[in-house]
Length: 222
View (cartoon, one colour):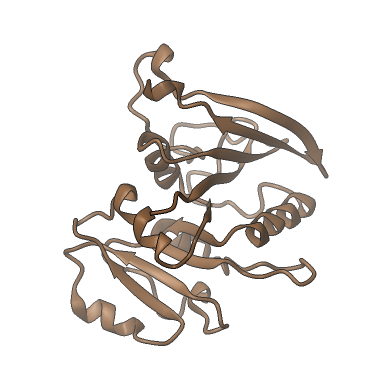
């Protein structure tokens, strides 16, 4: 199977938070940064989010405001198929949407999404594994994948050594607190020397926000 290039993308406060403890996240970054994020979607074959992101934000996951932009294939990780058929990311707009469910997902839930623009992929395990998913996505001629979270999804790609680069937007805000979400979930790292490492390639201002572009060095996995 051809390898898929994976980019993790997140928008966070200066202390790394993507939402308050009540789940409020709109909008952490400014319009210029959000426009740049849509350009990233246009540059990738597919975009992936977890079900918690869909339930919290009901995102369109489309490319908007980009001249002649194309919306990427939409992929939702949703082990129990909790997504509502009315979710805007499932709109029948000509762009394929893949819902990835677990092996224990009830067939009655899957049947709610039998329409042309939506396909359901059933994993061989109760929780879809990234190592299984990427080869499956290659069947759809996907060569580049933009992962927009949430935090557990980002952590899963990093732990499985499947993230190639990071695009991190940082706003001049602080949320703080242990109950507010960070852009990356638990990596079970107890030794700083074993922490995943990235090589920062560039830092630039995007409107009122900062854009950090970095590449994973794989040193964590040696």
